[in-house]
Length: 162
Image 1 (cartoon, rainbow, N blue to C red):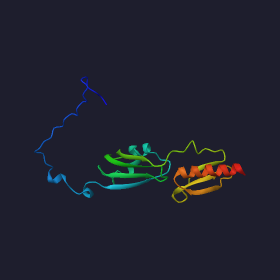
Image 2 (image 1 turned 135 degrees about the vertical axis):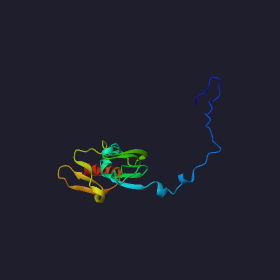
Image 3 (image 1 turned 60 degrees about the vertical axis):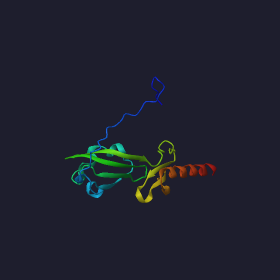
Image 4 (image 1 turned 135 degrees about the horizontal axis):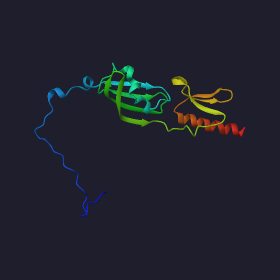
């Protein structure tokens, strides 16, 4: 903690309080009438930085309104975010990140193998272990990606033993 030269801790700045201030009745309304909540199922491999680009949402400019919230979730389960619609104009929608969470640890470098790869095969098959030579799927429906990595390590140990 920071100390002042006399050995005392610094005080928090005081805030001015207006004891006569009141919220006008027209400024209090139900949440549903003030803000809308949307859900966006983001394709695998698309990053948060990509969806924050104003052009990404441009074709939804007539649907969205300022102060709307968008809950975006990457379909492969790697991340989720709550986004706040800040500004809309023809051809652009500007968003602010309200909350962001990585849901599965990145495993790109750890999942490398000369014989196999971990690949997203869609919402039904989820992550799959694919043989790079034969293109055969060794195992699918692995979710999240960290489970696919664990399965690949187990499979590689079994192949090495035989």
